[in-house]
Image (cartoon, rainbow, N blue to C red; front, side, top):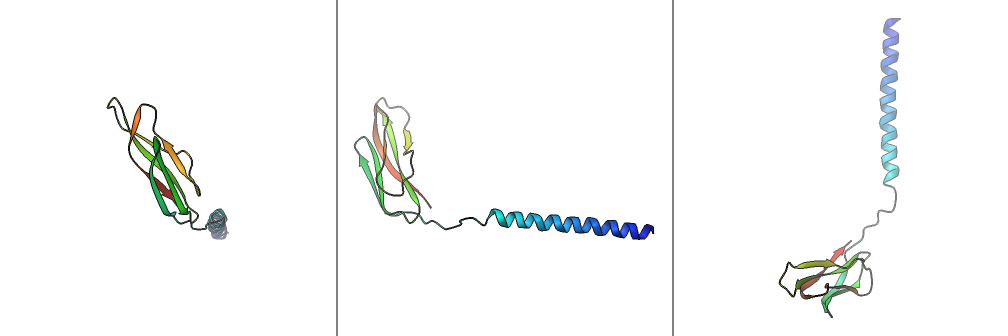
Length: 113
């Protein structure tokens, strides 16, 4: 009788572990079954000085986004200030301005897919 109880106990433990692993796998599969479409980076982009800042625009977003970035030098010769546009764009002009009492040194743009 003792042998049977230990066999039953091991079987219950084994099945519990199997069920637990099976449920974890199902939960993981359900978590990743959403929209997994692939987005490409924008193409046909151009950028340059825009008034007292920098602008960027892309002709095709390809599902991705872009934003302008600028480097500004204070008139008093302090540290260079880096600024990025706060909004990621998928169409239209992205503009970021230098803070007051600074001038544009350079700029560019960021993209993400």
